[in-house]
Length: 84
Image (cartoon, rainbow, N blue to C red; front, top):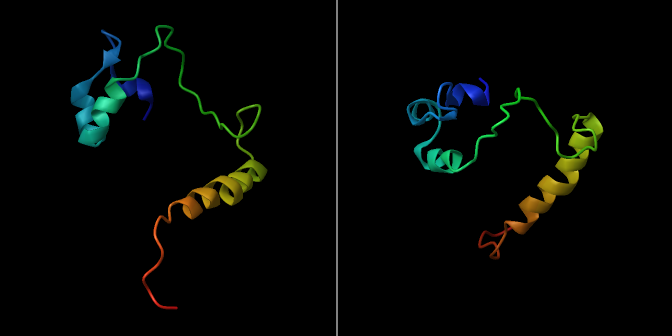
């Protein structure tokens, strides 16, 4: 499914009826708050962790070992109450 299929093709606005079919209710308002580009370029994929936007195994490994692990470590806010 492309992002454009979640829009009304005539009005070029988000289609709340279609969003309700595919998206959780709590996320619909977030999506509808996003501005739609007036240029309407074709959808494409982009990987934020390389300069050229292309996914590589090396960059995926870097994300898994540096970013994801860092997020998991910061989620602990209290000491564990379970015994070792």
